[in-house]
Each structure stands twice: as structure tokens, then as C-alpha cells.
Image (tube, rainbow, N blue to C red; front, side, top):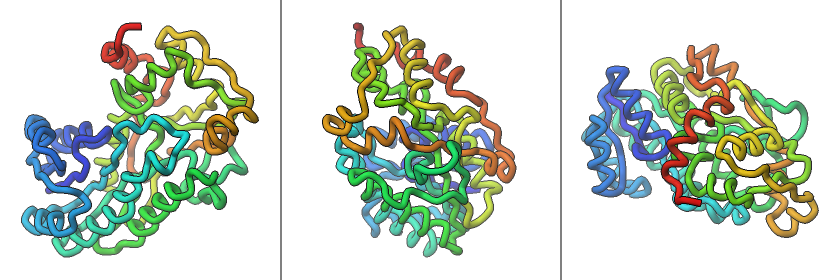
Length: 322
């Protein structure tokens, strides 16, 4: 198939381009800079330079390429470390989830694209009630913390718009929290915070998180393109959901740091915000059972425990000396 990957140089985009080429697909990767276009070319894909929010440019590119499938991996997470101002940090990504999704869908429809697969998120958007591990049919949070409301609204818009599309067929992938060498939770800035004990365990640390290695996220995306059911949502996570009080001290130990400080929830509400207290104490993880069954996908990194241990050495090599 001819696959158009929007966001081809992002955390999932990079391994996805490689995985698609390895699976025998012809890949065109979208980026908005010439420097990243050269990187796409070195990976073996055809680069296209355009702004994902430029409707005319995207329509022209898809009309020329006429791919069989489009993958929406567009985000803007550069410098997204100060989560105290959550919606502000994710404002650009939210525009890509709303306006960017509309542009891609319209352009794909006009170009006769058969399938569109879009990135969403598995974890804190779920309702903070009931069991610790949620499935795709479970409700999202009806009353999220104030500083996450715009982001959840954008996620809901993307999911509703994509799964409601018939032409092209729409599929949504709710990825767990990303990690990989120098990526996501193992980005050098995150590891620096953990190493310097600036990421405390808030309250009881009972919030449940799901993780996924970026290579596994890419492999699942290939499966979704090839065999996902139209209109479906899939949680793409590993087999080992974990509470903050488990995974954060374990990460600190793996990188050779001291155990994280503890911070009472009432103090954290004042200095960090209710939303960060929620992410540390109340959020829910996601089950990958549906993706395994319907996509025939198995994570090569079934647990973040071994996954962190494998990826951390490469990530640490990118960090400044202590």
C-alpha cells in the first residue's frame, strides 16, 4: 500500500516509517522543515514539506500522491515539560487534533483514501472511578481537572470525528505513555528531573499508568492500517499497568538516582495543581486485550520494567554529566 504519514519524524512517526517500509509498503512522510525532510529520505521514504494546518497545501499533496491510507501522528510536544500549565503546553497539539484532523480527513476524502488512522492517548482521559484498568468501551472523564479540560475536549473531538468517518474509514489508537531511547518518559529532560529528585511521588501515588515502547506503538499502527476494524478505537499499551508509587521509584533506581521525595497531596494542589495530583493519585490505565485479539498484535516489550532497563542506557548517554 501507499501510506502517507503525517508527523513522520515524531516519537511514533520515526519507527512507524521504518516499520511500514520493512512491511513492504511505500511511504511518504510529512514534515514542515527541510532538515527533517532529509531525515525522512534517509529512512527510505519520500519526504513532503508542508504545514499540517495549511489546508490548501495538504489537499494538494494528497491529491498528487493519492495514498491508500493516511496516518495522523501530528503533535507538537517540543519543550512539553512544565505540566503545571497542562492545556497551555498542549495547545499546539490540540489544534492539530482538531483543525489538523479536519484538514487531513477532508484532503483524504477528496483524494480517495481508503483508511485513516489517528493517534490518541490512553490513560488520564479515562473516568477516575471504577476499576484500575479500563477498556475502550469505558467512559472518559466527565469532569476532568480544569487545566486538562481543553486537552480532553480536543482528544474527544479527534476520536469522535475519526471513528465517525466512513470515507475514509477511521480508526483511533489510544497509545499509552511513550518511552524509548531518548523519547517520552526517557527523554533527557525527564530523566534529569528524576535524577535530581524534582519529580516527587504525590500523595499515595495510587494513580495507574499504561506504557508503550515507541517501537511497539509503531508495530501496532502497522497492524491497524492492515487489519483494524473501521470505526474502532484500540488501546495500545504494554501488559503491565503500574501505579506511580511503583514505576517512578523503579525508574529512579534504574538510572541510579535516589528514591523520589514524597509530597503531600494538599501541598501539591497548591504548588502544582489539582490535575497533577489527579495524575499521581487517581488516573486509570488501559487494557490492550482488544488490540491483541483484533489486530493480532503483541508488544515486543510486554513490561515497562524490562523496557526501561533496556532503553535507559541510550537515554543516559544523551544526558549532561551530573
